[in-house]
Length: 331
Image (cartoon, rainbow, N blue to C red; front, side, top):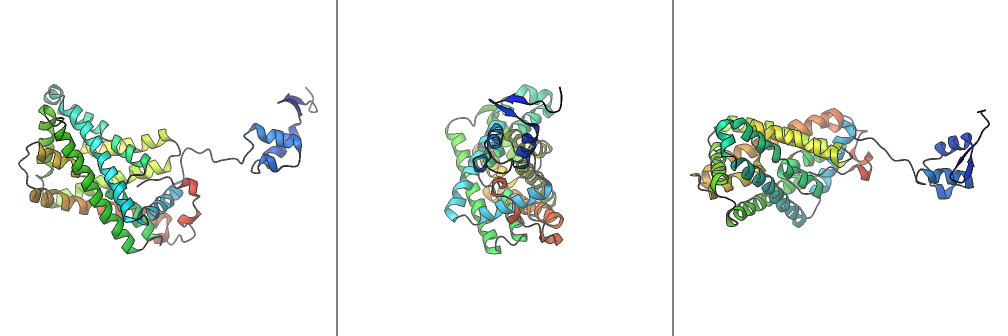
C-alpha cells in the first residue's frame, strides 16, 4: 500500500499524522481538544493523560515514599495510631497462629525432618505483613524505619517520632496479647500446637543479651526491606512477592522480631511454658526491641537517607516531590 493510504478505525478515517498528534497531546484531556478527529483518537486510549505503567518505583522514589508515609503515620492522632497498631498486632497474631497450628500439627514431619517443619512455619508466617501493609496497619518495627526517615528529611519532629514509636509499641502489645488469649479461649492452643508454642517461647528466652540484639538487628533489617519492596511495587502481586521472601527468610533463620514475639511468647506462656513475664522482658523484649530499633532507624532509614536524602546532602530530593498517588507504602 502507498504511504497516502488511510485506515478505517472507530468509524472515521485515521491519518497516520493524526496518530502522531494524538501522541503529542496524550497528556491533555481529550474533551479539551478543539479538533474532533483528534478527540476521537485520544478517546481510543481512554481520553485521559498517560499514566506510569512501570511495575516498580526507583530506589530513590521508594525511600522518599517511605519518608512521606512515616510523616503521615507520625502526625496521626494518638487514638488512630493506637487503633491501627492494635489491628496490626492482631494481624501478626493471625500469621503466627496459622504457622503454629499447621507446623505444630505435623509431628511426624518434625520428627523425621525438622527443617521441613521450620520451612512450613516460615512459608505461612508472612501472611500477617501482607494483611498489615494492605490495610494501613502499623507495627513498631515498620515505624522504626519509616518515621526516622521522615525525621531525617525534616518532615517530623523528635517528639512526633517518640509518640509514634511509643503508641505503636503499646498498640502492638495489646493486639498480640488479646490474640494469644483468643487462641487459648477457643481451644486452638492444644496438643501439638501447644507443644510447638511452648518450645518456641522457651527457645526465644534462652539466649544471652548480645546475640539476641544481633539477631534482632538482622531481623528488622529484613522486615524493613520487605516494607521497602512492598512500597516499591505498584501492583498487588509485586507487593506479595516483596513481602514473602524477606519475611520467610528471617523466620526460617530464627531471627528475633519484637512484635512477633509479643504474640509468640504469651502464646507459649499460656500453653504452659515455664517463663515468667520478668524473664520474657529481660531475656527477650528489651534486647529485641533495641536491635529492631537499631536496624530500622540506623541501618535502613539512616543508610538510605545518606544515599538518597538529606543525610547525604541530597537536598533536592525531598519527599514532597513524590506524587500523592505514589505514597502507598504502609509501615
